Image (tube, rainbow, N blue to C red; front, side, top):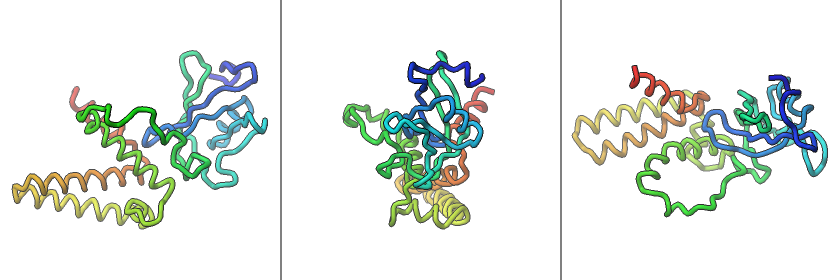
Length: 209
């Protein structure tokens, strides 16, 4: 689709939901006009239009927290955008990984099964947050700082621990070591910029074949 075929509002703007292409976490909601959208397409980095300052702004130009664009999608009415990015730092001006860090719903209202099912996605989002914010003293920050070789070493170590726990027939130990392995695998996927959804899609395809 050509940019001119999109539906902009009376102010010449279109809402853009910015989403982490790996963790799928929604990072922010911003607005684009035709010029900022075209700049985003041309540079493969996000450009927006500030409604308060009434000017274009390049995400990360001053903070360094730029967003590399992986894809730009539009909805069925062609009046809203979904911008998939690889963030180089926090998306929020307050220094948070995402602008959407607070919830109106109480966690206690979620079912136990629902929480267990969601924990993998939550953990993936936490890991993405750590990579973006790099808080001092966090173990995940340490892994990203050390790089892929360290992460791979930990994956290998935890896989070995899973084998040992299995040979010992120790369910509690196996649960702990499997959790450690899953965590380090998620860190590795993040470092490789490979969404967990891609792995799950492979499992789904194998299951259906």
